[in-house]
Amino acid sequence: MRPLAALLGIVMGSAVALFGGLLLTFVVFLLLPEFREELSAEFMPLLQAIAWAALLAAAAVAAFVGEIRHRAWRYGAMLATGVAILGIGWRYWPS
Picture 1 (cartoon, rainbow, N blue to C red):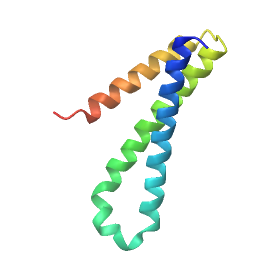
Picture 2 (picture 1 turned 180 degrees about the vertical axis):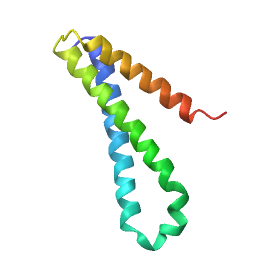
Picture 3 (picture 1 turned 90 degrees about the horizontal axis):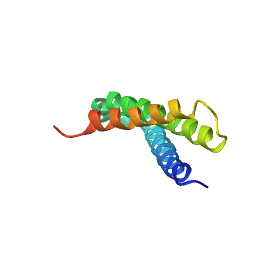
Picture 4 (picture 1 turned 90 degrees about the vertical axis):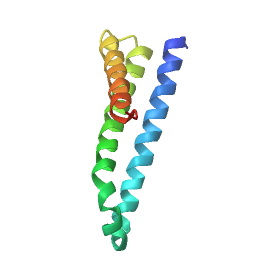
């Protein structure tokens, strides 16, 4: 496996794990209706984080598959992965 494919595999695995963890947190929010009042302020930020993680996971999976299969569109997917990482950094970096 080439080094870029290995790096994309690491990013892809991390992004999918992040997405899965956030999605399961959302499920826990839904299964705890008695705490809905206390958790209501965290609901929209959680949905935004899920959307960012889904975007990153989709871009990273596409980049990884494109790199493994030597597709012509892999560079666009790699660019999308980089843009998603920068977007997440810009969104969550403390100011």
